Length: 156
Image (cartoon, rainbow, N blue to C red; front, side, top):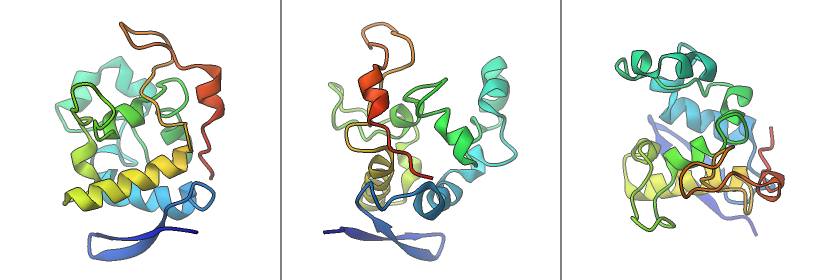
């Protein structure tokens, strides 16, 4: 059974598949990122490496690392900035403080649209692949494990 949502973004509507096997970067994630994230993370944004050199230069201009291609988006999921996409977009429902990530609010204009778009991205990441861990341990947060990396689906 495939659960479908209708998302209305920028006057355009499209069906969003709810199963990881059906969710692809080309068909689902790229259009979502273009509609919701391109203003600050589009083709004119710095690469992750450029952003990390002088983040304050870009954040003051409301620019974050580029997410306009499959490859640049994977850097924020798997490596070198493991879990960054998840930490930023998470709704906080699994956190002790229940605080959503700082980019969750950009997933849609309504709570329902944000939840549907987050569910779509989680399906793309894969069952069990959604985690907030970094490549290396930081504070109380452990490093991402090989088992967690193995659960990433990320179909093109």
